[in-house]
Structures are given as C-alpha cells and as structure tokens.
Length: 108
Image 1 (cartoon, rainbow, N blue to C red):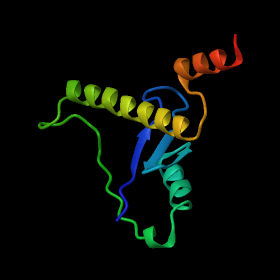
Image 2 (tube, rainbow, N blue to C red):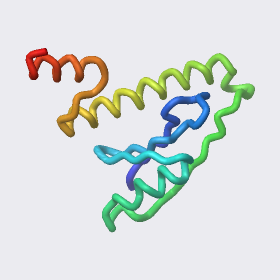
Image 3 (cartoon, rainbow, N blue to C red):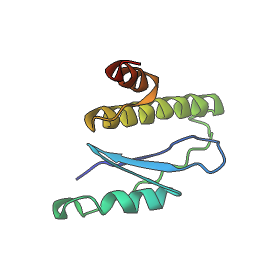
C-alpha cells in the first residue's frame, strides 16, 4: 500500500494550498482532497487501493497547543525539504541556493 502525506504549504496563510506527496510524486490543490485526487491520478493501477486516515490536528489532553505549533513547524520543514528534493531531482533551481548556482553558471 502506498503512503501519502498531505501537508499545508503555508499553514495559517490566507489561500493556503495543500501538497500531497508520495515517493517522487507530488501534487498541489486548493484543498487536501483536491491535492489527493491530483496525486492519485498519477499513480499506477497497482496503487489504486486507497485508505484515508484523517487526523484532526486540534489540541487535546495528549497533544497540547504548543506541541501542535511545533508539529506545524516540523511539517513545514518537511514539505520544504520535499519541494527542494523534487526541484533538485528535476534539475530546477530552488530557493536562494538554486538561484545562486544559476547565476554562477551564467557568470553573473
């Protein structure tokens, strides 16, 4: 079974988009469902079985608001790393490091 992670690109920002990730495949949507639909359309026939687990990310007795904020920070960092890895694998410049390498390659 394929594991898919869906994370907000910019949690708390207006117009937040969601990114669905699995292996080297990813997609973006205005909602988590849209991102999931776009990703599953890219999967092969062997990966069409889907089990969706929805975790309500609200503070409770076991996971405090402070821990929730820390989790959002970590998820944001993971999403950033996934986008960076995807950009590097696709041969695209990404972030400041990528644009710096592009400038160096052009001789700027």
